[in-house]
Length: 343
Ligand code: PMV
Image 1 (spheres, protein in one colour):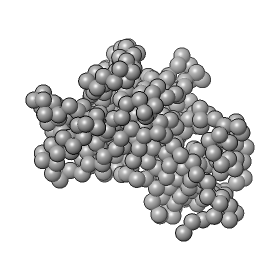
Image 2: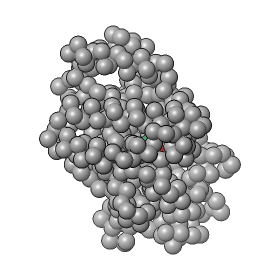
Image 3: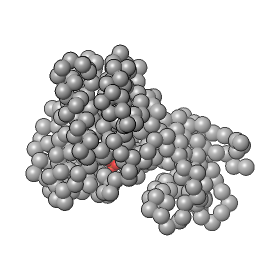
């Protein structure tokens, strides 16, 4: 029995969004971004070498057909990793599972591509830990680079805490690094599940439309200032400033999405209702919480641990039928190697 390389890679929620690309082949973002790594929303991927002519892809317990889009996406990424590790003929069994609903704006592509990149690279190179991967020439930074080629936001899931993906002056000089560890500031994140239906247009496609919005270039002109304010908010644990900037940035991204050509709507009427409700409650002094929203209808409410119960109570009384997934800041991906299949 070949060893099984198991990775649990977290999702991340962007506080300053990556939206739009300057070069899609090299996944060079139009702007730098900052995210918070989550703890409970993760992808678990197990990879092992198999003696078959083709790869086997199992998603949430289902052996998927070779021609479905999900398998095709994984195959493209595995081909890239095989070339990188110089292990072209090796076939792999990839078993992957998400702890949360996929493709609805909770960044399943981020956790998924991070987990696949680490587990497949470890399996292909027989590396049993991040230290061993590093010593064989596959550092976290290099893994982040390959994860990014699968899904831009995946590169930030390689690290815990607050993470920045810096655009840099050229595609080759972009970089990813941790700004502050998860121990610096414990923040909570309530994912209000407005809808778990798969979105009709993927963020991969929607990125390409960003340039057609008249709001996109103005955004790029002042983002570096927002980045430095956000970094200062993180450094001083200034929750009001962090929340204000996160809301501004999320609404700005959605304004761009809604004014691009073609114009898309990821927000639903319930998302708008939630936005208005949260702002009213905050103005009344009932709730010290702010929101952000990725490319989907689901709202991420950010709060400090002391306010968690109050947030839960108020959401439950106003939106009793809307599920909430509670999450919090997390420490980044884990790699475990099993020498025998476990029952
Ligand atoms: O990584 P992609 O290509 O799925 O883009 C996702 C971008 C957002 O999640 C909307 C924002 C971000 O920075 O994560």
